[in-house]
Image (cartoon, rainbow, N blue to C red; front, side, top):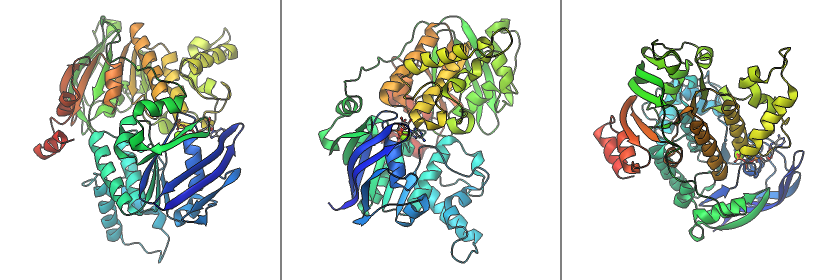
Length: 510
Ligand SMILES: Nc1ncnc2c1ncn2[C@@H]1O[C@H](COP(=O)(O)OP(=O)(O)OP(=O)(O)O)[C@@H](O)[C@H]1O
Ligand SMILES: [Mg+2]
């Protein structure tokens, strides 16, 4: 097969070397998976190919010509499209405008609204978002839908080289299935695709070849058929991975939180469950099932319209709904959000500040000043427990790789001893070994008597961390399962319960 992209002797350093002599090729008509632990250099390599970063040394060619794009725009003009790890949409613009903004102002400058809408509808249909009103502002979409929208935008341009940096981190199985169909179609048309993911099962399904980066070096390139997931993980880590056991973090204790008939119009309805001390409750569901909305309503971020919460702290006497996160936090509830860039991290500040942020009170000395040494020690403890790859605890979070930023966010909330912790996609974008560490810490938090709720699109994650799993389907509870015994089929069937017959049949064939 003909070579599309060739990378020779590529070097890149920030404070320390990040890419060290990379040789890498992508052929026309292949899906090439790029694997590596958090901080291995995957995004950096792709950013160079896509014109966002300049290399320090090395030579790239695209279609046989020297490839030295000085900007994203220049790379795009050469047929390169990248869906970045962090979402990059304009929240206040409409879906249609986001899909077509590269073209705004080009050509005649006049833009037919009808043509814009027609183009948007076609692009949306390809990623399974048909029916979504293209004039809605992007701010109204959930993270999964935004991710699909970015993918739709890249696909609509029929790129010669498509780079997908963790495109499926917030997608569920049916969406991924559809995406893979589109990628195969693009491959048939002769495009080259670089595919980054931490989900091993996907690689075996979609990739033709696999390259593995470790500490900025390319340690292997092989046909996907010659590798299995254990071998890939071994190459990534340089050592075999310990496999976490499924389920049950310990025995559930006394009730901590009762959710009674909670509802938010247009999102979810009549949700009831009890969370116990020592318990991890997983929540499964498809995109749009209302999982994120449910957590945000419990936390008071988008208040519920109906129903109530009762807490053990006052003997379940008061039925309440939080209207502000500050009130939920004062009552001992913490939420780790899904979209770390929008709602979570203070990028210019150090790792230490970001972790201690929620725990300021417990770190304050007699004069109300935060004890620097306590802050550093706290950060050091979590950087160690989660293996955060950094130059030191004072390094700005902006400089960390995506997966390492996620670890910092999780550390912040674990550090504060809320009795009730809510996690929305805690494993988003972290590699297999870091994920196992996060699961371990979540289960430890439960073992120490906290109650934890985990929303995840990955069944493996739900199984690894939960004692019980609640399935949401179209905003309603459709099943409450023992995590140790439920099958994936039963869980998926519950997630589809309130969908139409046609969709249920399609699910049965997945
Ligand atoms: N602007 C920067 N300044 C300093 N260091 C940086 C900067 N950008 C990236 N790095 C470092 O480069 C290394 C590689 O980062 P990169 O984002 O390429 O990793 P990755 O393989 O994509 O990881 P992940 O799976 O977590 O997304 C990391 O150690 C990161 O801290
Ligand atoms: Mg990355």
